Amino acid sequence: MAQNRLKIALAQFNPIVGDVAGNEQKARAARAEAARLGADIVMFTELFLAGYPAEDLVLKPAFQDACRAACERLARETADGGPALLIGLPWREGEALYNAYALLDNGAITVRFKVDLPNYGVFDEKRNFEHGPMPGPVNFRGVRLGLPICEDIWTPDVVECLAETGAEMLLVPNGSPYWRGKTEERFNIAAARITESGLPLIYLNEIGGQDELVFDGASFVLNANCSLACQLPANQETVALTVWEKGSEGWACVEAPMVTVEEGDEADYAACVLGLRDYVEKNRFPGVVLGLSGGIDSAICAAMAVDALGAARVHCVMLPYRYTSGESLKDAEDCAKALGVRYDTLPIAPAVDGFEALLQPLFAGKPRDITEENLQSRARGTILMSISNKFGAMVVTTGNKSEMSVGYATIYGDMNGGFNPIKDLYKMEVYRLSALRNRWKPEGALGPDGIVIPENILSKAPTAELRENQKDQDSLPPYDVLDDILRGLVEDEMRVSDIVAKGHDLETVKKVERLLYLAEYKRRQSAPGVKVTRKNFGRDRRYPIVNRFRDQGEATFRPDEALERVTAKPKLSSLDV
Image 1 (spheres, one colour):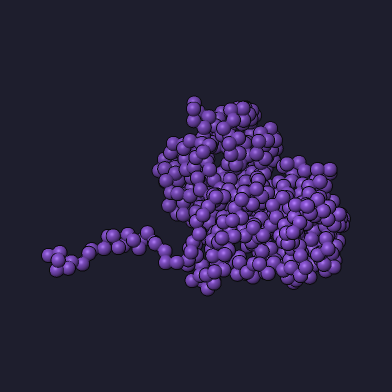
Image 2: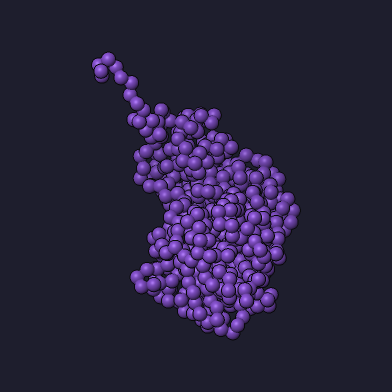
């Protein structure tokens, strides 16, 4: 008798890369919860047993063996007649290693392999896996399930093959990292595959931070008419039951949770908090320490740290020198009090003066310059790292994307640290998200409600305070101008001439491009940080450190125009006749 009702539990979980035993236990706990809910099958995300992305760790035979053994143990447990499992893992067949998705039911294992391996942006799967063959559906208790894996639905071919070979629905496990605007992009891709195939689709995405990537969950179900039948929360673990019924038009999801997912600035802020939390938790740091300067960058990083970990695990340190203003001292103290964190003040004059005295014989006759400014920053970096060494807390570094782009940061100084939650936020975005946090906080955040970043920090001119009356815009364009130029150069890879055509000054754009290239060596040595934009500094953007190219902003050879010239029919002159 054909089955006309199916209960599918969605395990939107946070696996840890390399923690095979821990991920196996999470799967076991989810199966128990799914059984309590009356589910027939529980679905997990891409490469769940390994954690995603495991990068070159998947090439290690001992790691492959551990994942396979965990899968086999879980499969044996399904012989009890309870819910089946759909779970991802690396799977070796002979000499080939595949990104696999396995159906575990009645003690047996049936696998399907990922066909389309992404090899762009943050992805490098062709390095680690072989392409799988075009798949057919798997038979689960009389229902033919199509199991395309993540990238397999970003082009039509795999879904077309599944539809043609009898799939009745699409269950898609994903390791899809967050970046701004990703939610809409996922819906559009899913809707395109549904429209082509006529099949309903489950889009199950993992949550959690892994190095610089954040997986936001936000899993969903679309019926065959592309209507939204289920929406799970972002950034939260959950086991959710979806109830399916088969009618004359095929399968439809008739019962499932429906929540609202944060978008825009709220989603960006929540991603930064999640990325920081998981980096600290998964690396087993007891807490974090950071320099609180009275400026906007360190203030928002402190707020994110408290939201991620709670005030008791955040230690803020003011490290003043002779150029630190009374205003900065007050702003930093007010911010620490609003957040409820431990706050210490350690004047750095003895360290800086000691370094200057030590170097005086070598520097005699040389004027003071940026060298002495950097000594202040490096003294602060050394002190923070010493606190970290003594007490075990990780140093949070606080440079924004605007500063990291143009090298407005001191290597081995304020760039010291283990992780940077705002590394992919431009300066004006830092201001915007700081104002947002004063009126809102993410679901589950551990920080206090209300204003946590003093209004004076939001309104005063930014300064590094490394010399008398210093302001950032003494040496940089206004941040709204700088950020727009940088988006053109970094995110969009625009020609200088095209950025100038948007209304920017040619010499300013050329200066920013020069600074961007010169600072590559600093970024190569910087701490990882949460990816928020489409192109971050790290896995997305791989530029050479040694690089003499500069776009002069002059008339540029464009291949499309050249092609037009080459293929155009020449005019004949009298000499051609």
